[in-house]
Length: 369
Image (cartoon, rainbow, N blue to C red):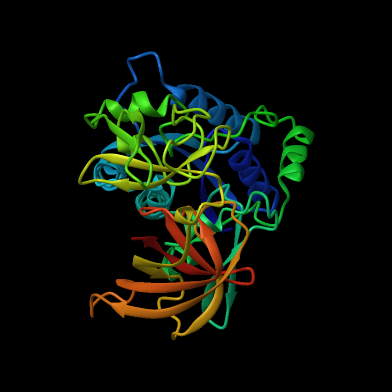
């Protein structure tokens, strides 16, 4: 009997993943990962509720359960990077790094050290093995597919991982949980920062990075408002700019047209905004990305036509990888790439990831420069 250690987060997805594994005859045990300690004593500790829910599910399924604390590893390998990226004016995606460094590295190593043969998580994704090669596939539910967040996984972690709910729609997952009287069947999905939870983002970030207020300006240099810190804004942002529907005195747009964050001028600490979602400064036909990772371990040969997403939930966009330049002879996944899109892309944001696909197969991805 194959020994599987599954991550139980206290949510419905991981609950049903554990249920399916047990029904399939695996020897299943569960682990709850706690990776954040910083404000446990300040009245905000979602991990306590999640731990209780995970413990309840493990008891209901009659599987061994215990918690582990990876907070030091999370701080060193994920959160420190998260802060450095915001400090540099970029917008990072901590969920991607969390998967790479914590769930499919630290957790995987820990589970294997405890005698597991494989791990499992509640991600909406799939793994296929063919001719000795492991492929990362999109989840069957297009609205919940999470392969975007998993593109950094290579052959080894994929060979050791199961995604039990990857073939299911979200509605089917909830129905299974309800049918088996799992307490998490109607629990709201988490949308907060990986392992930190939902909170006032501006207030949270200000605890770790000093805010530097500055001007909000038009491309012509007209001051139309004040920002409290460039780190609080991302390209394409419409809400939360604090300048309402006022018109630019020098621009061609009129009152009532929404404003969008278009660029960050780090040198002058200015947020450049434009009116109208179709303003040309909001769109790009190409980009350069670094820290490329290819699931197969080998990059495609340019020019390579495929599709890509520059943000989660974006429909696949046709593109061509026009060039790939290696930055390290020792690391096949250390490279930069240049990408041309078939159509202009809205709000391409430095620090976010571009993830490449060939149909339902995730090829890999890179960090947008």
